[in-house]
Length: 144
Image (cartoon, rainbow, N blue to C red; front, side, top):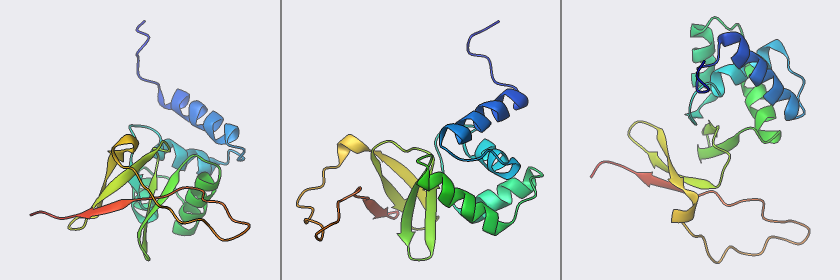
């Protein structure tokens, strides 16, 4: 049997449950189902609304509020990064490594920029008692 075989649905859900547990979260049915959708393929950027729609198409019964709550819990647990592009638009990124983003304004697509290609300098000192957690750069692009 090949070492690179694709995981079965049951194996994927067991791995997903382990990932949720390892992040310190209780592996509820809804968390495992949403994590299964989020982490089944390559890195991706997803809005809560898009994940809710994807869950519905996959037969996962979950409210939009639960999707939002779960995405925020996954972010707090370090499984996702939240990328805010506008006050009313946030994406959740499964790539938690150091990188930044291009934002395609015409279609709302986020494209990863490798972390080593951007350097941020002169970040101001934070107020007393605070520490810089991270710096997010979103480069807005459009067709020329």
